[in-house]
Length: 139
Image 1 (cartoon, helix red, strand yellow):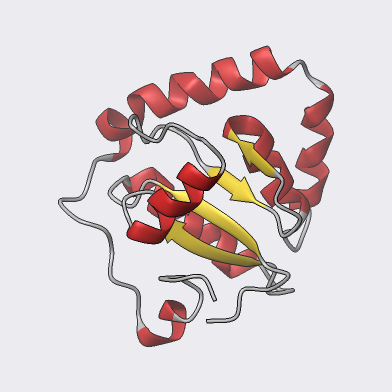
Image 2 (cartoon, helix red, strand yellow):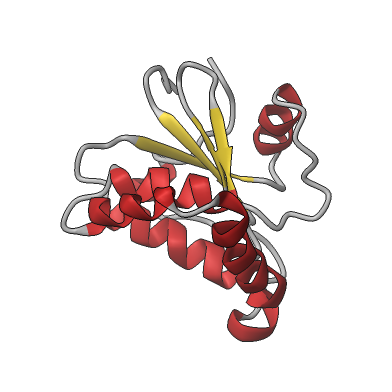
């Protein structure tokens, strides 16, 4: 799979909220900016290790950019929103809020996401059309 120039979204593959967020991103990614992998996948773990990110808690979304920058938690969510169609790029303005405030809200939601939205026994298997958007290897 060629992912050159694509931004990679790493997410908790068993979290219903996270899967819903990925489906939302896919629907609003009109410019085909993103590719996706779960943090539980081999490629997800490999990419996280490459950036020295501890994924033992699986409580964050990660956005890896082509120039090897990465964002996590609220900063990742805002950078993702910036690339979406519609009015969602306007949400990027919240980046002006201090990170500790944004991440406090993010952490509260992340801490309760399984209780509020549920959890799957395994990662979702995408349809063949969507499967092309998920990475299983680099290269």
